[in-house]
Image (cartoon, rainbow, N blue to C red; front, side, top):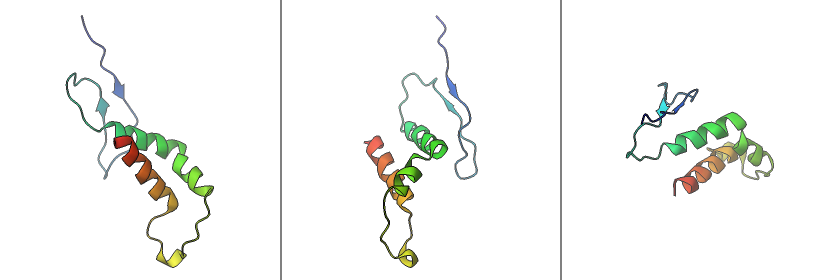
Length: 81
């Protein structure tokens, strides 16, 4: 019986290199699902929308990471387990 191989097209490049996701590894496992979650957030802007709802009281000249970046990082860490 032939199995269907799913391919996920249209992922954004990482460090200038294309990303291709295929679900044909049968027994392989990885944390590639995090790339998919990051891509979903990138396209829908979920973390940016959430950050817009939070008042940032930090001194702008001392800010290195935006609220959206911190929210995205924390959400992906939680998803990674």
